[in-house]
Length: 167
Image (tube, rainbow, N blue to C red; front, side):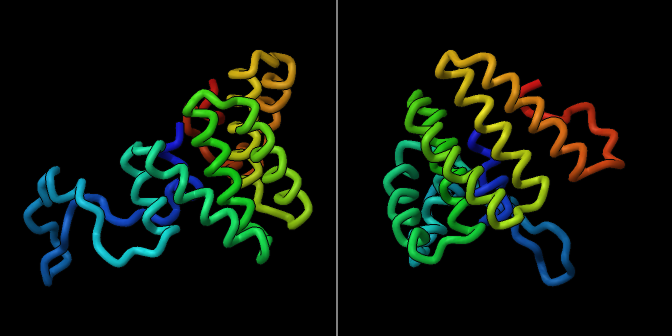
């Protein structure tokens, strides 16, 4: 679930294991051992993204908490994205109640700041999963329906077989 997070939806991928040679062609693939070593000098947010991209949620959690505090004063959609990521990580670790608090705050912020439908759809889907984890199935169903509608709105011409990761 959180592998697509990005600090939301993997928007800020830090590399995919390949280098390009001078002609734009893939060079020798980077070994798995080298991919698992975090580059030095990354900012805290980039470190969290690096951990999330590798499914290392327990290690990303304290980093995301630092980023949330840093972004709290600034607010805006970037703050909401970090709340969304942290909520998804908490849910993946079995803390549905903690996830719901963060995800609800992200949802309210996204609505207030006019977030794009795709971002709202990702948040609605995450809320659905957290409600499901908390055993609140009626709320989960409502959130999943909202996610489907928002994702259709975001990509009306999409003929992907999925509309919500929860389907």
